[in-house]
Length: 157
Image (cartoon, rainbow, N blue to C red):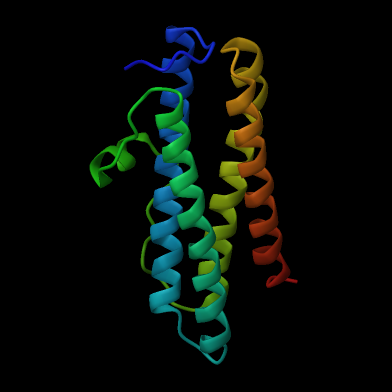
């Protein structure tokens, strides 16, 4: 049964497509954060291992929320790594160093990229596609990424 929630079908397709791109970004960032958790080395290993675990836990919740938002507006969520890699605007991480600062810098760049991408789409969701609910939803995601980016930046001071 189709969702009858006051969003025109064409608009909900656009929102779902945009949210699926965001879902892909969240998944790639999640995997990169897991990589940092598993592979970080150095004198600060234990502290950073725990820090990255906390961050990937937050991302896991965000992934679920994005997928469920897509379903709530009547569309299917992408769910394969192949599709995520096609849709994401992030790059997979090359394996250069396993020190915490290298991981932190790379993850921070990705969070900031997602923040900018979301910020550029908040008004579009509300004004162009007439979905204030999804606009509000991605605003909350942006705020969560801003806080996570702040936590990463604090390690670089």
